[in-house]
Length: 145
Ligand SMILES: C[C@@H](C(=O)O)C(=O)SCCNC(=O)CCNC(=O)[C@H](O)C(C)(C)COP(=O)(O)OP(=O)(O)OC[C@H]1O[C@@H](n2cnc3c(N)ncnc32)[C@H](O)[C@@H]1OP(=O)(O)O
Ligand SMILES: [Co+2]
Image (cartoon, rainbow, N blue to C red; front, side, top):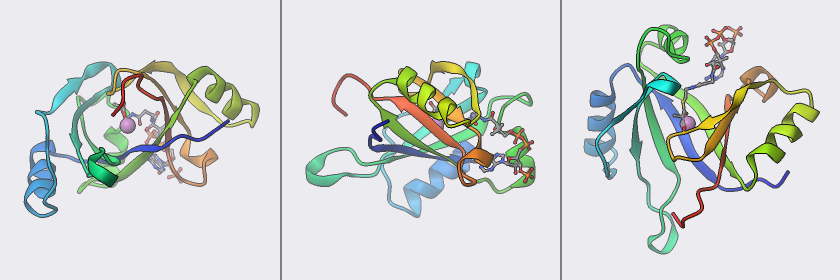
């Protein structure tokens, strides 16, 4: 498998509103859109943009708040009430090839690929199989970003 760019770092939070204010007012970040709900993923999402080189978009921070009690991040927030770093997301060219690669190495892929916050297929690999880091793999969007 050929690793692509680091697309985003997922940060879990008990309050999107408070986290947005922090990244805007303390970190000086641009928040380019309103938060949105992804009930199928069990989260409410807001992306914080960081600038890349020569005016390009850099790596994003993905703020995620539980959508409801059945959210996959409910247990994480219970253990980390102030929130915290939750996952790293890397791009790949072909999601099915990447899934086969990790499965071939005996790593636990958590469910089938599904459409993520950028509109392309994603899957997660269990943190205990990935040196302690919950790892998200996403297919690179077709348009430039
Ligand atoms: C919108 C989308 C997108 O970008 O497009 C997203 O990102 S959605 C992002 C939210 N969606 C997801 O995360 C989906 C995939 N995640 C999951 O299925 C779950 O969160 C699991 C990774 C299976 C963990 O589930 P849960 O916390 O309920 O299980 P658990 O409490 O039994 O945890 C099992 C062990 O893993 C550890 N653990 C749990 N979450 C962790 C994390 N984020 N990073 C590192 N370690 C973690 C726990 O401390 C525990 O270790 P000990 O046993 O040593 O105590
Ligand atoms: Co993510």
